[in-house]
Length: 232
Image (cartoon, rainbow, N blue to C red):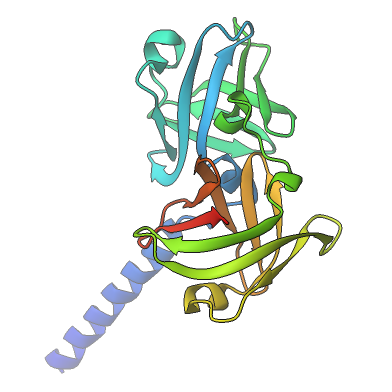
């Protein structure tokens, strides 16, 4: 009897732990969250003051992690308490460790955010690619690309076509002999979104890539086995 009671108590404890884990599990990131990942330039209205904020997927206290570039808190002292970020209903919020809003931005056009007018100074956020004049339109992406591992080993070739796959994306073709990573993902179409390359799948969530040097893009957020995409 004592043995059965012990087993019952252990079972209840495991069930409680499982339920607690399920309740605290973070929801999957939304498309809005994914579209913010990577480096963004924050500037004042005259753009004579700038710094780079990198938005990350990892959780950090009441929001998601970010990296304030080395000069951010000296250039913009009012964001020195920023510890995380959230986005909801197209409002991007920079928050402190307790979840209190420090600064909020609204999207005024695709890839451009403007701080709420309740703040004393007007600030802007745009992707680093756009800020540096390297914003890519679909016509700059047409052609043949090679997927490679971080060591440069090619694992697949893909052709980004200039014909429509649907109303929002372009068609593509994969060449025979692709690695199981690519065939398992089953790419079906592609599009550009806020300076990021978005590869759409027939089987699941899309992959996003960000350019880190000319004609070389890396998958974000970075996974255990980094994946690069290089133009031929």
